[in-house]
Image 1 (cartoon, rainbow over the protein chains, first blue to last red):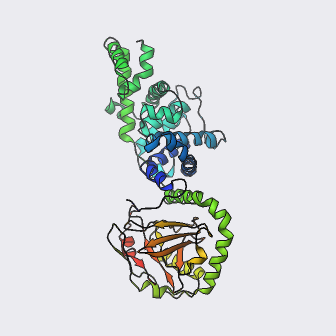
Image 2: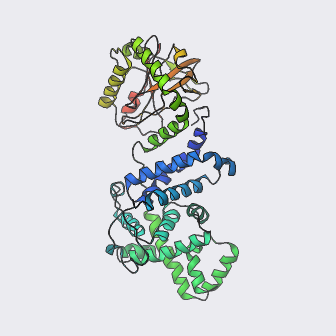
Length: 193
Length: 253
């Protein structure tokens, strides 16, 4: 809907127009990264404001709004890493060694949120919880590719890694996730086989 | 291609994200490697499981509005920092001078005709004698809290005659040209910060929107306080109340 706003400093309206279609997806990515609804809201807002401050340089480099989604995801990822990961605001970091060979039931539930709980979807909650307890690099790769529908190229840009690294992490992450889920959702795993 | 190399790209293979060269190589390998073929099936299995059960959470109420308001603040911060004191003084003076009667405003229908859209008519939802803007804020907020479901509303409007008190750039107020079918500005029952004032131009009239600490927007003119209550139509309408509320409220001087 075009309200005919006169452009404001920073091309606010253009930014909003590009952001709007991805807002829900970005919020869900924030929720899955931060694991907590309050932190997710802060992360989402922080990422949007940071993106807005840098919107001019983005438009100069990539006119026409192309690659806006992957650019936003990269900013979201960087905000998460900078503000949450480093400051220890994340509730738990699971190392690759710490969870090797364990089922999801062995790992504390650090994800369950009211927002997701309200969905009454225990199967998906179980899956998300298992993803959340994967090693960090696998977790982010699966969140972006399998939960947020980013292409491998977009995920690579968002994570600032080569596309081959994303392919590897998604491959390994799915293998690890399968091991953890097969004990909890054996019937579902058979259905999908 | 070796088995270990296949296992590194098996997900991309399942997702159809490989180029023709890699695709041919992995297909050649799978033709003779049962273990890797099984790895492909297993990868596909967990991929399908995740994707078919995936559910997205809704954004929390007010988050989008809050972020957009933050963008507004960011956009205007350089103006506001320099002009806030002058603007506040001017507005306070005007508030003291104005005798505001919501009643006389709400009972006067108005058409906001956009240049490229259908007219929008407004009707009264609340009326009460108001003596000053602070009381206007309080009364309208009270009414909203009592009668309006917890949705995000936009409250804009009012015609201000004494424009010289708020001319750009004295107050750092941004001017918008209305061309759409509805004004859109955000207001919430939850407090959030908004620009000090925004001037709209509707059918050649200047319409000012002033923000208050409550998040309400209100304006007044030398003739009386005017309100237009409009909403972003993307906001879900709970139980028809919003439509009734927005059928629509406003006044005209």
